[in-house]
Length: 133
Image (tube, rainbow, N blue to C red; front, side):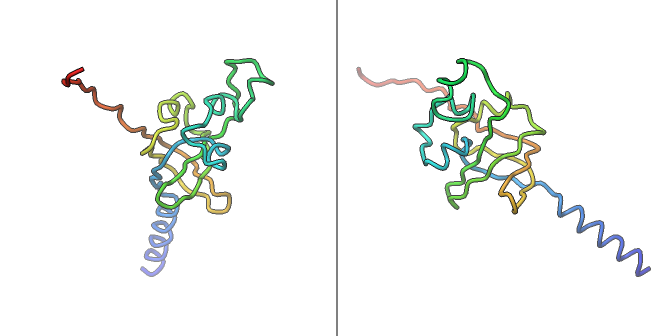
């Protein structure tokens, strides 16, 4: 009986250790987050990884080594995102947007979120201006 209880306790701890968490923040690149240039971040950072990279590379060529980061406003922390289990085309709808939710596990040693899911905020509602021009 004690062995069964011990085995069930070990299994439950192992299940909770690998449980995914949700991280909410602004989706950007590590370079833009380090500079604090969120609104002024050039879009070429998301295509080839750094400012001015189209001077060295052909325009429109997307490289595979582009890294994403999640900046949390309330804590000021920046987490790099391991996107090996996600399609980068899915993440493009959340670039430079607030309230992006990345689902995954946090590796504290490298400050990296190993992403298993992604939710982008809904688009803004359409509005109609009824004022006097």
